[in-house]
Amino acid sequence: MDNQGRQELQRSLNLKDVLALAFGTMIGWGWIMLAGSWVGNGGSVGAMIAFGLGGLMAIFVGLTYAELTPALPLSGGELVFSYRAMGYNASWFTGWMITLAYLGVAAWEGPALANAINFLFAGVLPTGGTLWTIQGSDVTVTFLVIAILGAIVMTVINYRGAKASAVFQTVATVAMAIGGISFAVCGTATGSIEHFIPLFTDGKGFVAVMLAVPAMFVGFDVIPQAAEEMNIPLGKIGKVMIIAICMAAFWYCLMIFAVAISTPGDVLAGFNNDPAAVPVANCFAWCMGNPVFGKLMIIAAMCGILTSWNGFVVGASRVLFSMARAKMLPSAFAKVHPKYGSPVAAVLLVGLFTVLSPLLGRGALVWLVDAAAFGTVVAYFMVSLSFFILRKKEPDLERPFYTKAGPVVGVGALLVSLFFFWLYLPGLGSPSPLTGIEWGLCGGWIVLGIIFFIANKASKNGKVPKEETEYLMFGNTYKRF
Image 1 (cartoon, rainbow, N blue to C red):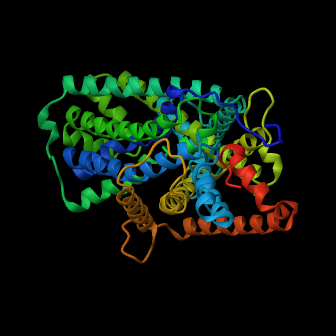
Image 2 (image 1 turned 60 degrees about the vertical axis):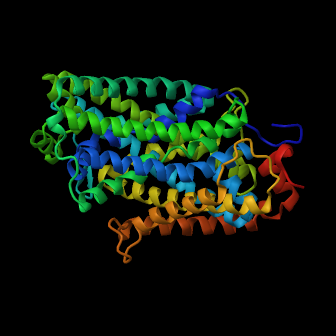
Image 3 (image 1 turned 45 degrees about the horizontal axis):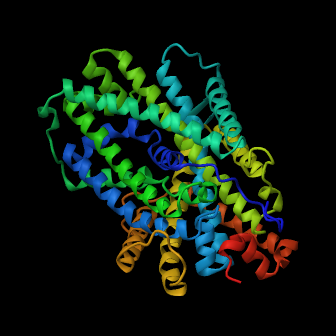
């Protein structure tokens, strides 16, 4: 803490750590399961164009983050930006929604790890018996043991501080990259340009690929959460964020290319239609003529699960820490470990959530992921709006990374956020609206937030002077008064 008692996090992350955090969080596990369907739905070139456009849309939003993060390099990211632009209430709402986003995705990673290990040891690993069934999904002993042990390990890593988390992130990201690049090289060497046909399908197929794009780029927004822990020049933070988005777009296009060139269309269709298949791994095994290569691909992709999981634990715990530090939540969650420099109570709370979430089974957790996507879109909109407001409200705020053509970028970011928002709304022609259960989760989270907000306002936290909140949110360096 500083000499006035404000809890602060240790600056321990270097440039490599930050890049691995953003890129590894974005990539995750989805590509190994879905890249085959992207090629099948959109065609080889059509799918790559869809992800190129997706990267461009993400850059519009990313540029608003890139300017605001080094201008206000404080843990909490969206929470801090929206407070500066729109005040306490908007900030509380934004922080609460981005917490939903991070917790929802983190909750899914344990079951994803269990699924990956089951694929890896299919027919060998015993189930241990079925404990219960939710939404047609059996919750087995083995599934729970793997998912819960994974959650405990990720919690321990994050408990030991940002640097321990960053080292883990870097190693896992490199391992995943080696696997993916090996597939691309081998697939190109053994494949044929004839496999690229069809280059395009139809509009419906292209839209089906575009629907997957928003979820595939979520993760670069973790960088602002760890901004307070970065030991790099402020001007480089924004550049790293944009570089990470471009790297993610390149990665997805590379995997689409590798799938398309390595595997004939009829063989790929068989993988896509087989619920027991892992399409990218199956493609690697097919082009090399040996199932061992498929297993190696799954191991590499499992590293993507871990990098994504680690990144979202970092994100969720830092938002909770920042809300608590600003007296928006109980102060216990603002405590920092004296040795490791981690927000221990916030990390443990997120860890508890990820330990308990596998009890819902694989199927039910899809609801949390979809609700998380909605929370992310809300946060994107609030940050884009904050970007606009702060350009007008604080034109003299020092911006180490200044986004050129600010009005164009701001409008583009708002339109991208609204487009993503439309994807989830029912009754407006959306191709992929949230279901009633998923809206129930979003609504329930908002109602829970309202209850906490009212309770916090009624407690002694609600009587903190505005000047103190300003100091707790921004510290002496960035406070306005």
